[in-house]
Length: 99
Image (cartoon, rainbow, N blue to C red; front, side, top):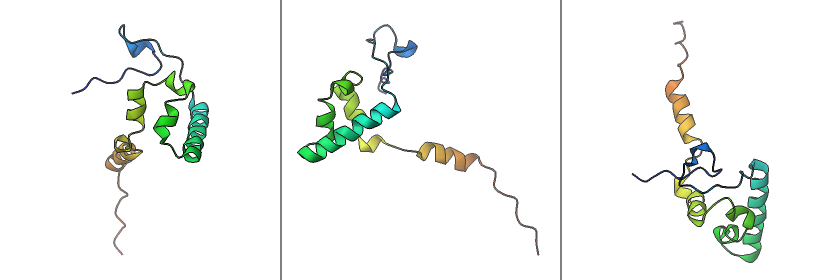
């Protein structure tokens, strides 16, 4: 089994061997950066990972390996885990009374 990736924020779970990381971007800033990178990739007809790898504000937070892992569509499960748990733990409604 592979080792889990260190936390991106270099927080208390980072451990002594992990370099400190800049604070997280925040959702709004990350969304803005991704939108800008997507537009640039489209305009220049270049892959999105290549554009992100040139953005200092992105590379300050993620290594090339982290970017590759984050952009891997086969690793994205979306809301499937929480939807599955919800479906398996909900109580079905009682049966309708006979008519």
